[in-house]
Figure 1 (cartoon, rainbow, N blue to C red):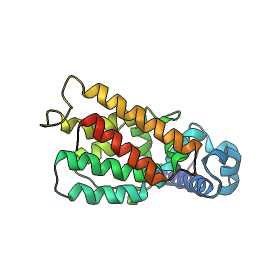
Figure 2: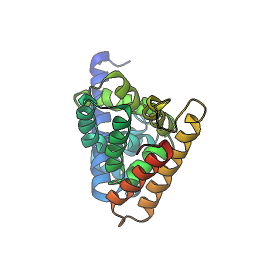
Figure 3: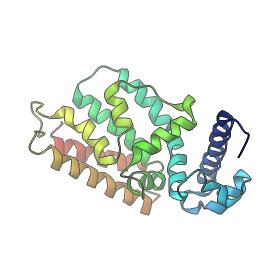
Figure 4: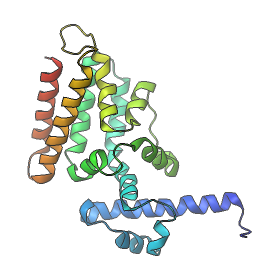
Length: 221
């Protein structure tokens, strides 16, 4: 039995996990998400390949954790937007515009994040990341925090959409909100996939298209 104190073992576990996440982030920056491998991560972190599996389920989980680094600018700007006055319509469009600016600039990273292997269960991934890097954890009002930690893109989108239910002049009501949300997510997925397939496409143009669709399906003018 190890004589190492439990707190020390936990500190070492967290330290090693952080090393792997940072190494993965650096590899994504340097080589792109499709070129990351367990072997490359282990070599960069100066550990044996098998050590990674003591801390993470697989490569996909580790890559998702590393992808949270790409939210850095988004989460800072989101904090500022959450403090600004405005109607639910204003908040809906401004947050989606900020989100689009972020994801279309790194389409492969975010397509994997929101539509990859673990994309239906993101809350534990996000929570785990901020347990590893607590200094990076953003502080938001409750409704924004719930959206940011949303379990998947459908939930996150719905949390932004639902405050528009019953707003005069809009098309959103209790009967159609689920369908409208499905349309929004499907359109977002397709535009993001197109951005991945055609990386020379202007991210601003992709974001503009998304905002046009959002306005059309909600009735926002």
